[in-house]
Length: 107
Image (cartoon, rainbow, N blue to C red; front, side, top):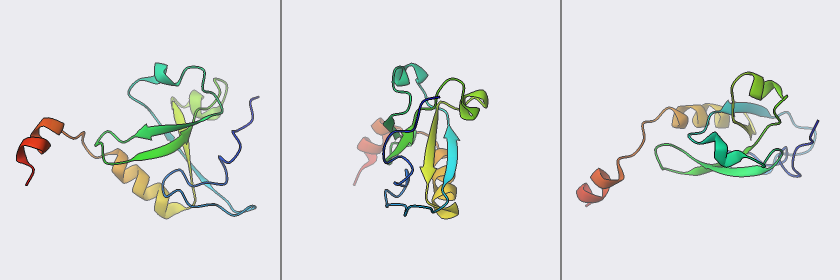
């Protein structure tokens, strides 16, 4: 088993705040557009951009034999509480941004 990267359980992947030691965290499994881009990064932090292009967040790449991979997730985001978990899940369901449309219609 590969251990988590240092700091992964001490930093909220959504809001970036420090999580005090001995404080419970929540894990959110995510799928990424190009899982191949995560090759060789097991146990590492990766920056993942939301499909809507609004903001990046931190995730960790799980090992192949992990529960997250067995459930079909490509990465896991550790968050500090239900509020961050819910905000991340909500943001993850927003549609992708049409960058051409946004730039043409920008004020």
